[in-house]
Image (cartoon, rainbow, N blue to C red; front, side, top):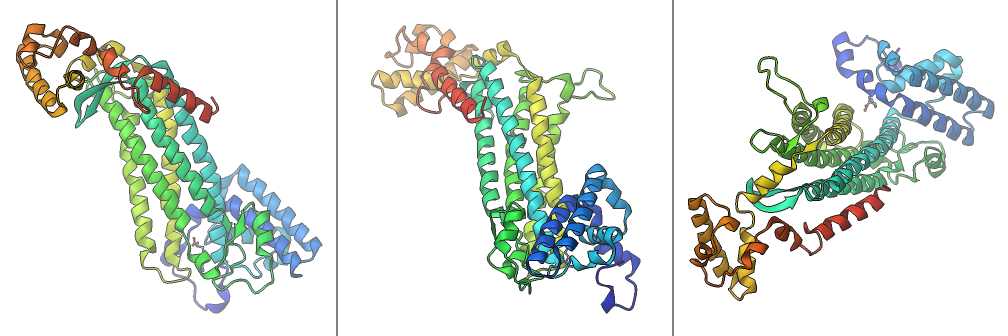
Length: 458
Ligand code: ARG
């Protein structure tokens, strides 16, 4: 039976009912709805609506229901209740009879759904924080194991300067550290309780909302009832966090797909995260990474969708807001899955050091070094840049790397170049010179790994 039958004399059209009902997705809020209901029943005792004994019977029945829901959440889907709030109330009435009908006194589904969703978001943030941390750990461990794996660093997808695989891993662990801090920041604003705001104007019972908030584990109660029942900023913020996080994962995936390609062949992905082709027997495709890259799209879509849903809404609650859940659930599930998958990818990855180093040697990744060498000998940088540009053209014509050119050939471009040039052209010297904070020198990378390990409790 619907919660609101009294005002109506006709049955809802079946097609409308299906269109309107939200149980098929908001069943995921069952635990939060029950926990919120227990707290509300306690609040009703403080204002004399329920006796202590009545509250105890309700709490006991709700706890039983919680157990049933935890054991078999999917069973909820068999019901034709309109939403999870009606479902919980209906089940409660089944268990305790008319007493169950008192629970909704002074409460509206508007403050109820806002409360349930915030409680769910808080649980989800905890899971996401754990996954962000696990992925950072995997990146830092991979970095630690590959400190001397030199590879080309790119700009414009052209070989630019040598870096190490460790430095590449740490770049992504920095992005993840920011994702982590964004989530923690979101949590601060999210952690205020809507319960007791009623439908829009506040509840007519003199409930201590701060105490109620405390029972539910919120740090405070919200300040304005109109805002509270229509606020979904936390949904937008979490979708933004997920969108940015997924952009990071998508770039991570793209880099590795390229590193794993036959053309680069810097890494070999494990069989555990790749699949074959039904036609071409030689293929081993990076599906896990491609799916991470691909799923980035639906998460951005959920954010944009929710922004548009909320954009012209008048205060306070409107049914449009029911559209907040599916996109949020899907986006946060997707982000979580992708982080788990990224850990799995790193777990079995093999770095082909020889290939990486050979590639780093090609492509004139040490040309900046030669320019700096000239600068150190008094040549203005702009001039040095030009000289090296010409030397590179000559080297390309000879099919050689800069360090393979004869001194006499190099000196054609500047007689400042002497025999000591060969040492600075070595890969190791290119790396070692990046001594300043954040650079790729061994010392800096080691320091970054140590600091990250402490931060992550490794
Ligand atoms: N299913 C609704 C939602 O998700 C619950 C709130 C319904 N409130 C109402 N007044 N119809 O937003």
